[in-house]
Amino acid sequence: MKFYIITGTSRGIGEALATQLLSESHHIFCISRTINQELIDLATEKNNKLSYLPFDLNHLNRIEQLFEEIFKTIKHQSSQVEAIYLINNAGMLSPVAPIERNHADLIIENVQINLLAPMIMTSNFIKRTQEMNIDKRIMNISSASAKYLLPSQSCYSTSKAGLDSFSKSVKLEQVNKAYPVRIVSVYPGMIDTQMQAEIRSTDSDHFPHVEQFIQIAKEGKLQTPEYTAKKLIDILLDQQFGQTALIEELQ
Picture 1 (cartoon, rainbow, N blue to C red):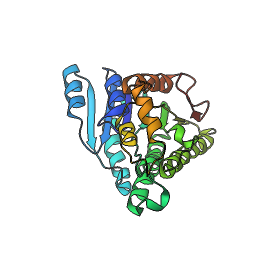
Picture 2: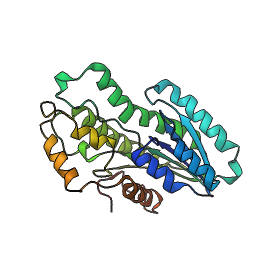
Picture 3: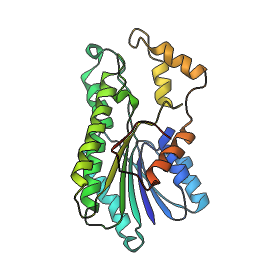
Picture 4: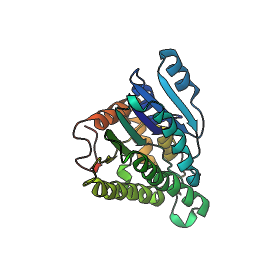
C-alpha cells in the first residue's frame, strides 16, 4: 500500500492529483480548508481508500496533531506500508500589490501557507518516518515566480524562493541518513486555476503586468490542472526523483 498526503485538494492541482492517484493500492489523505465532497464520492464509488482531513494550514501549531492523526491511520496498516509520499501543494498568491500597500495580516498568511506550513509538515513527516526502511518522498509545489520576479508579487516570490532553499537544505540533511527521505521542489508552470483568475482580476494599479496574464489566458496558453497533475505524478514516481532538489520545467 502506498500512502499519499496531499494539501490543497479542494480544487485545482490538488484535486487533480488526488483524483488521478485513486487506486486500490493507494490510500490518499486529502487536506484542505473546505471538504471536496466530489473526491470523497468518487473514492467511495471506486471503493478506494481516501481520508479527508479538513484543516486550515494557518494553524501552524496544530500541524503536529494533524500528523499524529494521519500516522495513527498508517500504523494500523503497518504491515502493508510500501511507501509514504507528501505533496505540499496548497498555495496562496495574495497579496498582489506593491509591498507598502500590503496589510501585515495578508503578508503573514502568505508566508504561513506557502512556506511555514510546508516546513512544519516536512519536519513532522521526517520525524515520523525516519526509522522506516521504505520509499519516502516529499514534493513541494513551488513556482517559477521564485526565480522570475515581477513587481507586486514580492510576498509570493519570496515565500516560494524560501521553499526552494528549504528543499535544497533538507536534501543535504538527508544524504547520509540510514533511511533517507527524498525531497524535490517543482515549478509546475502556468495553470488554469483560481490563482490565475485572481491574477487576471487584479487592478493594473496594483499589478502593472495584469494585461500580459489576461492575454496568455485568451491565447489558451495555460495548462489544465489535469495535465499538470499527470506530469507531477510522473516526476514523483520516477526512479530519479530526488537526484536534484529543484525541477524548473515539467517534461
